[in-house]
Length: 234
Image (cartoon, rainbow, N blue to C red; front, side, top):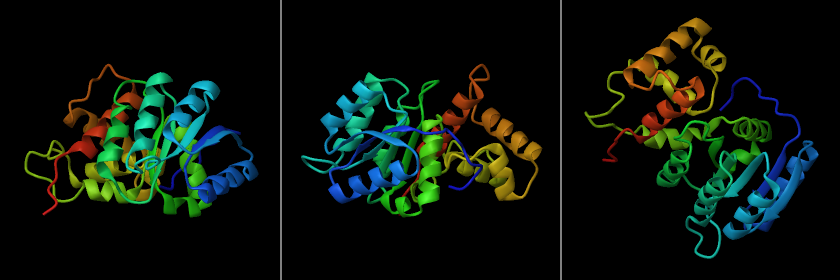
């Protein structure tokens, strides 16, 4: 998840988590880092209301919230993005729940879909990385936990839409899915920026992504293709 640092300046943040200790910890962390927590809530309905009322720069949302502690947070985040288009959301989860991540990613499928992220709660302890991920999402980027990506890459079937990509292009696409810029990808793979730009162009071409779309939109579409490529768990 490391890459070039994105500086969005002070952010206005909504926090939605029914665990009081984590919620208070996030409030303290963000406040001490110079950001403003405009609302801190404990259920999905309150999240939607807070987003509509405050129009935050980004929301941090637990996937599982009352009453059933299954996917209420996710469904509320999707509803918040429907009510306030492009509103950036960073989801937190105790476990890797790939289907939930995919549901959230679907809301970024349209051009200008706004920033989205999906991280395991353990990542919050790595404060600098967590804050960097939050800034990336607020800036309109897509940030995915490496564990989520790993589970989506398990033994793909032959009809894999990524089959045409070279191993290096797959590496580049996986790093794109983590929210890294071309420069950060180049540093990670120890290649030139130009080489990465060429790989990205090849990825767009091989995945038959619309040439008339913006570069950001094509990156989102490429990541969605990467994550939705079929796989088998056996």
